[in-house]
Length: 160
Ligand code: THU
Image (cartoon, rainbow, N blue to C red):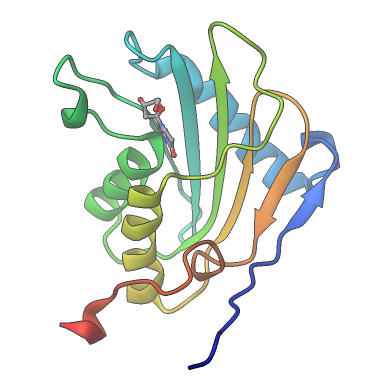
């Protein structure tokens, strides 16, 4: 018997103002697109903005449904949109921001497990790590250097 330890490392920025300029602008896009969230049930609005290597920015926001599981998170709306509109492009950076109607979200909001799995597929396909920056409405921003760092022991095609 043995134990293994898997570690994840994040860079922490005190606020979005401290981000490198191109990332600050990408995060601004994520903040703006929160407005397009269709979130009548959770009232939790998430915006995601992807920087592609062809110069394009692709956005997504969460889209809910009265049949709850039929809705989709902002990150998957964005990444599937990128896959459909720019199939050959690589995703270099992902910025995520979340806000709630009922309170100020001050802690960084990471992508959910299902979004991590979806994003992992694209990171492995493009064979270039994607940088992921995530925040709430205010406060600190966490940066992960890759999706893999967010999802250790990922299930991938090699298991099939
Ligand atoms: N949500 C996202 O858009 N991204 C995440 O990673 C976490 C959750 C959305 C889904 C749902 O519309 C609302 O936030 C509350 O869970």
